[in-house]
Image (cartoon, rainbow, N blue to C red; front, top):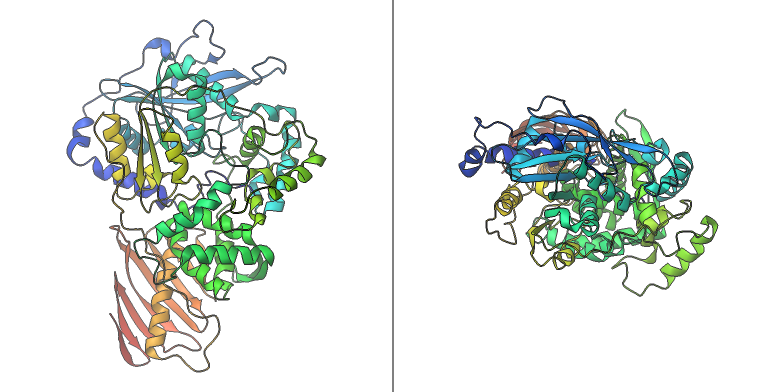
Amino acid sequence: MRVGIDRWAGVLGVLAAGLLTALALFGAGDAAAAAPPTLRPSPLPEPAFFGRAPGVPAAASRAAPCGTTPGLVCSQVVVPLDRTGQVPGTISLHVEVVPALGTPRGAIFLIAGGPGQGSAHVFGLDDEQAVSIYRYLFPGYTLVAYDDRGTGESGLLDCPAVQAALTADQQRAAAAACAGTIGPTRAFYSTAEHAEDLDAVRQALGLDKIALYGVSYGTKLAMAYALAHPTHVERLVLDSVLPPEGPDPYSANVLRDLPATLSAFCADGSCKAATGNFAGDVAAVANRLAAKPVQGKVLAANGRTVSKRIDGLSLLSTLLDGDLNPGLAAELPAVVHSARLGNMQPLLRLVYLHDLGQATPSIELSFALYAATVCRDGPFPWSPDTPVEGRQAILNSAVAALPAGTFGPFGSWAYRFGNADFCVGWPSPAGGASLATGPLPDVPMLAVSGGFDMRTPTEGARAVVSRFPHGQLLVVPGVGHSTVTADPSGCALQTVRTWMLGGPISGQCPRSAPFLAPIPALPAAGLPHKARTALATYSIASKTLSEAEAAWLMGAEPVIPGAYGGRLAAGQREFTLTRYSAAPGVTLTGKLRLTSTNLPLKFQGTVTVAGASAANGILGLNGTSLRGTLGGRIVGR
């Protein structure tokens, strides 16, 4: 199944929180001292942008100011499509550079994930706020970001069908069709090719040694570059680490590590109101759905019902994106536990909302490039030139030969979660695009891993750190993927900065409060035999408000339907409920606004409680206090 190393489809708050934290850090202590407003960008020397050094296999256009960020310049670096020269053609790489403030210490390449994200597009050097973050992280460094071939403004690959595909079957068929659309040039988008493009940009900019900051798949690309060009690497910062030989063709390492990651997520006791065994619930429900998928009706934003089918793979896909989306993470423990008890409606609705959020423009994340890269890279159990019609049998035999426990608590059906199934119909060559053999340079390296990162587990980061004599690991408990910018405490940001300045660092950040605690266990699916009491209605109303807060934070759509009726209209700092229902027979109507961005988030507002089996009344929410009158009785805390 197409499980992107980065989806970046979650609520914008995931990244915005990291940006806001960093901006707050600028107001105090060494940050303000390090970047006083009187400093001016230090321009790179003229040869870094103009002309072409002898022997450089790429041509750089003359750089020109672009965008609104002071000092930002853009250029194009032209590289050969096929470096062997057998296939003619070139690709123009869009490059953006922001010079350092003050005394320059070097240049750092910002490398995004996917594969499929254009780094210039993702890192947003045209945004002064974004630039301030990266200048804080990397003081004294010139910032360089370019769009990889096939992404952003560097010959974007776009196959609408693979961009829109959701199920494993849809994705596999769309990938095979996309390969035909791209044609034979699809063979020139491997990670090894991306690494050579990176070196062409380095040479075109006139740089000798460079620092590398990779995120997710960007860590694999950074290490591929370090293996191929070790003498040109000054240091590496790897956030959410994918080992260079990864990903596993079946995502088996992700599945084996998943129970421990889910248990660690709940280790602070925050899940106990939802479930006593989050990991066990996930395994039980996923295996059950793999054996017998469920189909049901869910409410759409327009008030109509639509049919939704879920299986084990769709549950795992939804679960995995919880490490990028704190609203989804808050929903999952209670929703999956409810499904284990037999109430599938909340899960059907959550997977439906999750899938709505997967509609990603190719300029943001090209799944055509994702397919071209992962299907060329491998590794797969077949040889690169194996005809398509012979691969499924080889894949089936390879899976059957895997030892017990390969997929952790999941059955062998879960092999389809990996790229081998996704790429089984990709025309030859498929797989076999190996990276340079190294050795890795003996340079400073810092790996950053989130304790709730499910797609690039911490064990992979530890294995990579062990390959660097001067490697260090920072673990951030409770935080998911793309850890540095997702950590709301600012600890990861501060630690990276300290490390860049040569200071001592701790190997672990304190666990910060979540954006929202996991919602409590959801009420039963059916209507009660008689009207609910005031206290029972209050309990359901309280849980419904918690669920609504998580749905708002999840950010799937401007209008979010309730599991059992009604809707939530989402604003930037508030949301409005109209007969919103998370349990049959109880509805909430009213407006809630965000009153504090200290974590966990706090809301304030008034709701009217009604419904066929509710004790009707009004409740007022003020942070953690919910009080009011239901059925003529004063209730609340």
